[in-house]
Amino acid sequence: MCHNLVMTTSRRYEETHPWLTFSLDLRPLGWRTWLLLGEAESKCRHLAGAPLTPQVAEELHSVYLSKGIHGTTSIEGNTLTEGEVRQRIDGHLPLPRSREYLGTEIDAVLDLCNELADEVANGRTPGLTVERIHKFNRKLLEGQPSKDDVIPGETRTHSVTVGISSYRGAPAEDCDFLLDKMVSWLNSLQAPESEPELRFPLAVLKAILAHLYIAWIHPFGDGNGRTARLIEFQLMIEAGAPTPAAHLLSNHYNRTREAYLVELDRTSKAQGFPVEGFILYALQGLVDELRDQIDVVRTHQKEVMWQKIVHDSYRDEDTPAKRRQRHLVLDMPDGEPVSRSKLREVSTRVAGEYAGAGSKTVTRDVNELISRNLLKKRGAGYMANRQIVDAFLPLTLPNADLQR
Image (cartoon, rainbow, N blue to C red; front, side, top):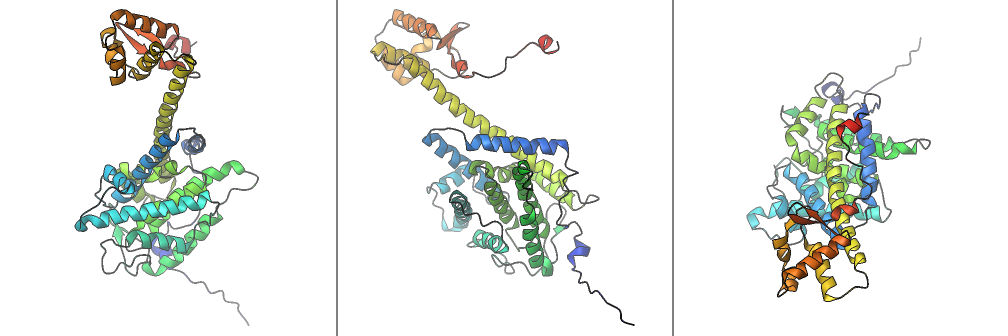
């Protein structure tokens, strides 16, 4: 009698790390998660198409690049402040030899982020590969203090423990296998052609899951968190997120690092090893940060529109009196009434233009600005009527009206 024997080879991680399932079940994701995914896509599209002056756009890009790189590195122990990171990015932060490694780490993250952004901008999106993950880790650790058993860019050969409860990474002998399996799994998570609306939400979920699985596997002797956040950044920009928005998850993890560690720890301990809690935590932070970005962008857009309204009101009127009126209303503080006696002092140029002028000149200018709907009376003072740019804001109704 002949028996056909099926030989199976088990790996150690299957016993020690059963939460490494390489599967994604969308059903446990609650309604809040789906709402946040929708809002994240909407706000990313809004940001990607937001019109800004080149100077403002460059400034905002630098600000959020600094925040993202600071978040990526400071959560791992880099002691440079956000301001110092900005200076380093701008090339204005020389450091003494004893601290140069801190700047070298910033330089490495900046180079990798720029490289990834250039690839996407030029239509080169090679996707995620094991080789790329090794490259991220190697570049991040080069020039950094490290233990003797840590080789930049190479998977570890020893056991490691990390986190608030001494979480133990996957068995060292399985790390290469697990990295390969993770990359194959993530690359296979594609939205069906018949459901294109799932492309962006699924890409964001992949970015968060990539971070989670790198943290679970912990394939390298050092730099796993920084490597995970770079993978996350790559997947976000490949999904179409504007680069300022692609840095926000790193910033969120850094600003809420205690909650980050708690949520991360919970994923491998709770029954069934649910990932939806970590996903919701990450998404809520991403959307909160996106809301802040939208507010900043809107503020700049409103300023540009206000200036346009004022200049259009005085089109073809370029007398000294008209210039003085225009400068007065443009230089008044936003949202703050100015007493009549202080109108001359709202700025240096306004003070110069009113030098030698009497009170009747101020009265005529105020009345002219009010007639053009650029100035309004507020109590004992006057306020620039910047609210006229808010064309589509909903009316604020009394509670009684809202209940009808």
